[in-house]
Image (cartoon, rainbow, N blue to C red; front, side, top):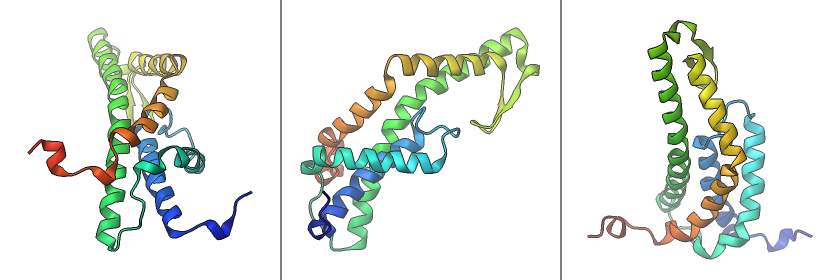
Length: 172
């Protein structure tokens, strides 16, 4: 049973770090970041996933709450950037599939048959839409969503925000 007396600011800080990385991944990642999924479902899934990941990655997080607001913002911004980048890398594959479908449609003359797609907030041609949906199905069949969640869990070990600095990233 959950002990509310044992809950402290440090525990909430650890949860918040995980939650920011997970929720920022859900903004850009395919399937999880889809407009067809309601925001409440995404927030609930991010919360549950953060609670599941918290015991696994707690050792890699900054353990104490930073003394200044700028310190807190820097740590949370680092977590958000890492989550956004992981999701962006995966979504670039689907953007490439969509661009390839647009090129095929242009060559075949199907650009006049384009329809409005609310997911992209633009018009999408029929073959590009088909290829995108087919790529999503292949992604799900290949368990890409599970691999993405495993990569998220491993990112806490490979890229701990508490130990990142500009000099480590640039090699200077």
